[in-house]
Amino acid sequence: MNIAIVGVTGNVGRKILEVLEKLNFKFDQLYLIASDQSIGKKISFKKKDYSLVGLSDFDFSKVQIAFFSAGSSIAEKWVPIASKKTIVIDNSKHFRMDDNIPLIVPEVNPESLKQYKNKNIIANANCSTIQLVLALKPIHDQFKIKRVVISTYQSVSGSGKKSMVELEEQTKSILENKKTKSKNFTKQIAFNVIPHIDSFMNDGSTKEEWKMVVETKKILDPSINLTATCVRVPVFVGHAESINIEFSNNIDIIKIKNCLASAPGCKVVDEHKDGGYITPAEIDGDFTTYISRIREDKTQKNSINMWVVSDNLLKGAALNAVQIAQLLYEKYLK
Ligand SMILES: NC(=O)c1ccc[n+]([C@@H]2O[C@H](COP(=O)([O-])OP(=O)(O)OC[C@H]3O[C@@H](n4cnc5c(N)ncnc54)[C@H](OP(=O)(O)O)[C@@H]3O)[C@@H](O)[C@H]2O)c1
Image 1 (cartoon, helix red, strand yellow):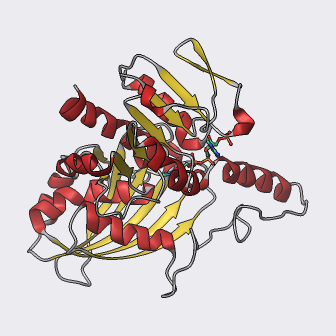
Image 2 (image 1 turned 180 degrees about the vertical axis):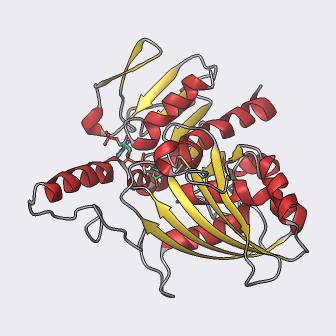
Image 3 (image 1 turned 60 degrees about the horizontal axis):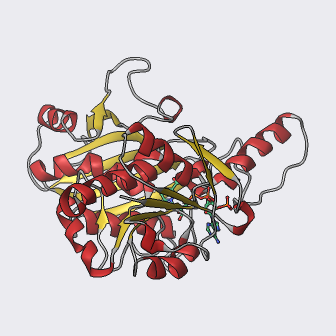
């Protein structure tokens, strides 16, 4: 099997390479694609140097799977072209809500993958949605979730490598008492938090908040009501989420904790003492999604609160994409 990675120099693209190596994903040829400004540059992978090529020069019939992580506008133009010749796993938001394109988190809705045959395209979900549905799936199966209220604390790597550079430079400037400018954020991001990710919708919510609602419904269950507030925080890698959940059925907090403890891809770290929970700074590079602070919400019947943390570039993007490729290979391409 041959594979291509479009956007390989980006935050998600370079992590796809890392995950392919860590999971020992077997392939014959690898083609690495980035923008015109990167053509000819070299990337080393498993002790071999690969020259970067441009999209317009690449013949997608050479590969069986193409990972796209170059943003929405590139996906809109190039994925339909590539998918005539190969199967595309796209990380952008562009195709996620197309009824004919499956939106996959392998631990949650692997059965939907068969729909890839409709258009030869599989969409990877939003980073905040992936870690949310991973934690919700087992407790929804057992107790039926009625409503979710979520606040996110999303790291700057979620908006690309330029945003990471901005946080670093702004932090240094402020510490040196120099003036700062915001380029990729609407306000100062260093030493601040910004309740605004992606564009505003007519109802006052943001597109990021809308994505969490509609993607959770598509992946897990359309009957779940969800409301979100998405916030960018000055953290480089790792998204955290504070989640309040109301169930339709009677709950037992011990059973909920046991159920979460066996959630695929997740680990419960929940000790009621100093540091007995997981924070983003601890999980950079980690494949696991962590669940902490699980407790009953006594203000409402059958309700709980919890805290979920994951590496947004791994389970939130690259790892999920490679797991989709593994599932695709095992079930349909082998
Ligand atoms: N970061 C996350 O947590 C996350 C999570 C889920 C989904 N996503 C999605 O994944 C996509 C990539 O995000 P990212 O954070 O990796 O962005 P990024 O760091 O800004 O990287 C963008 C990549 O796209 C390449 N690119 C730009 N224009 C191109 C063109 N015309 N042809 C070919 N390649 C081109 C860039 O290459 P050059 O280096 O040559 O410019 C770079 O490799 C986005 O759609 C994003 O929404 C991101």
